[in-house]
Length: 341
Ligand SMILES: *Cc1c(COP(=O)(O)O)cnc(C)c1O
Image (tube, rainbow, N blue to C red; front, side):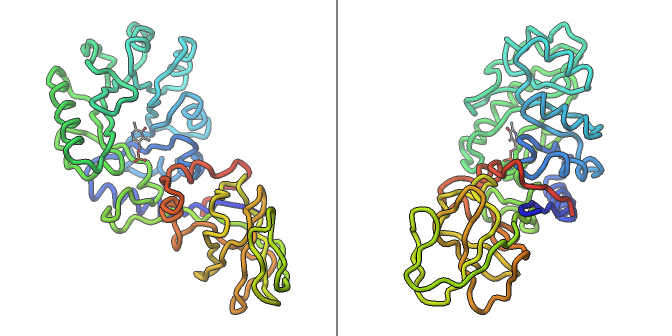
């Protein structure tokens, strides 16, 4: 095996405990998009056994069925609901709960034998009802909204208050959820659970977030070549790096942009080998990345160097690229073997 993503079970459990201790509410674990690239089956198998995980949430029916087929028994919410009427039979067969966001979807299920949650658009500007439909159905088991800019206090409080006013029309108890990871900034007394993705995986949505959250991933690959170059020789496509002096050691690490190492990090990022830095040199290629090996580092062919891990996180790389950790995590490639440790 050349390229892999080690998932640290202990860190998943740590993060659930930390989030629970902070939020004091059960957690709906958001494992859409293959658990943000981490491997939904591997991650969910750990979450399933944790008593503070109340349910799972995914984006679409296919992701939910994958979880059921892997043995997940807890409730599963499909945040995107459904599109076609013939999906409904699968929701029933697999005991999966859709989140209903529109009159279009509601018309399909109102007379069906299927529990559902409702999504309200209080300012996200994406899915959800502006005004809720009839909420008297005994099949209605939950209601939710989503914050658009959790770090913006004024806008978020406006959304929270708007949601609260809609809840006045409810005449029974049900699951009520608003907060995502960054939404934990707000202490909301009328919700019953929190809907958490990013923080479960050990990324912090802002600097002062729960301090003991730990990255659950170590994403790396084997060193497959090591050789000394002469001054003036060039590295990789386009020759964007020129060897500065004789006897410079260059290693080839068996992961590239097909695995989720963004090409824009060429000449700008490092691999981590036993907490020492190996600077990436030259263009990152599809399957391989070159790194300079300082003379003091004792690395040999077959050793593992990490693109991201506890020392250098997705958040840090994403700042360099002016994006968010979510995007880099979702880019982790298909051939990357997920290993639960
Ligand atoms: C993805 C998503 C979440 C999880 O957000 P994090 O920032 O990863 O915690 C929660 N709710 C909805 C509706 C989402 O789409």
